[in-house]
Image: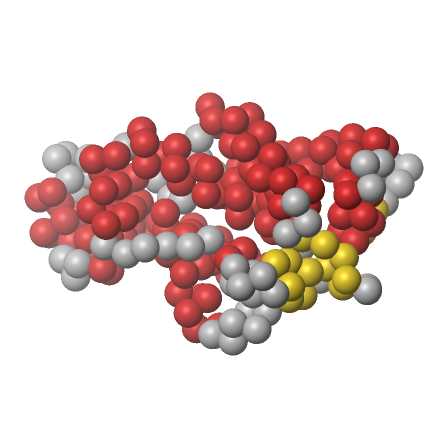
Amino acid sequence: MIVLWGGNKKTYSDIEVVNGLQGRDGRVEEWFYNAARRYFEACFNEVFFNEDYKHEIFQSAFIKLWTEIENRRIKVDGNALCRQRRSGKYVPMTCSLTTFLMAFAKNEYRELVRNIHEESFDEFYDSAQYESVFAFDADDGNADEMKSRIVDECIQLMSTSCIDIITQFYYQGKSLDEIMKTRDGRNSSKDGLKTAKNKCMNTLRERVLKEYSLCNL
């Protein structure tokens, strides 16, 4: 997948960005940082909830993506952008650099939230182990598994309230009445809880469909 990183004067493809960074082109380095920042800013409010950690999340995610390129885990092979698998084999990338940036950012956000709300998240995290969407390579060949993990990723990035409601209703099979008893007055009525659940699910559905589209699923 080739994505053009736009600006008023110059536009670079992902391939040109990787070649420029690995060639120590200062103009590309500066432009890439600014373009990545703009993309992150545009996506931030759609993906994350906490504005306070915005700068920290971006810096950490950008450094990780830059390191992947600097260490040539991401490289250009012919006319294709490739990424090195754990086996050492390079395979064509199925996602753009922007998708990688946001995947790293989502992992950073998840860790921050987990540290802050450790007690609320522990039960949910202990129930399954997750990997980010960019861990999948083109020849893994299991779209159903990838979709399932994308759903899990999107759930983890929701508010603690939404995670609590979704986990109890869909994963633990509890009724709304049963969930009400565990909410300690956080929902004033059964109808209020139902409305909150539907709002959480609509948000989750939109994000999952967006991730499916980014990964060509």
